Image (cartoon, rainbow over all chains, first blue to last red; front, side, top):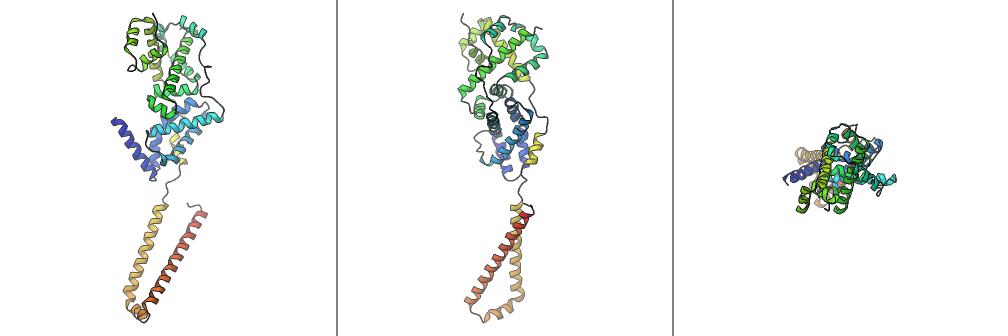
Length: 199
Length: 147
């Protein structure tokens, strides 16, 4: 709780400095939020050039609209929200979808096969394999943009459901449902991978 | 034995506080569900260790270059007006100090109403000229791209 108050206090201090004309304070805001913004952009946008353009667009938009920030959420959440919306608009322009229905899920036969051979109890040795990191990254990359993003925000950035709903605008129930499905797809795909690549 | 659903298993792993006792009792007794719990725990422990994505450029520097520079005109304007006011004040004081007697003689024969009218007209004219000069100065600054 104290931490949240401190964050808000810091946010207010930084925003006031920027609004008073001290643009150098904005560099602190960039430093504080760059990681979160980068994670969202990398998970939602595939091309390197678009990612850079979007990151710049996000911060310039945040700077321009800083006067309108009401401190109803953390500054980082507000900037993450701008990032998410910028990515959504970009995907819409490119006519790309966020979640391609169930096309990403394995069919029942594949899951059954993976479970028959499932040697998940031997998984520990597999985890130790350096190859696992590459496979994990590969499988996460294959997930739909929205699934990748929420998995990253929840598990890597350790944001709460409330913060993720604020960023994405998804209802809490939908967010939980997507998160459950994303984890399940990932688990099934890793199991299948393990079956295909015996150690 | 009826096994737990995937949602129940995930809830047990990722939101233990929201998971009910029946689930934990089942997991203790059921090796299949327990193994699924282990799978999720191991998988996401690894995912949480994955390195974060990052740009290969200095994003902060690129953005800071594009931000508009802080406006110092307001401060400059204030200083300019304070300066003009101070000069005017000193001028009026010095006129009265050095030419007080002459002024008294000059305006002694004129009625006070006439004096007031001449004074007001002179002040208005001066203010108008000063404002016009300042406006011309700002237009020229803009033309030279200094603001």
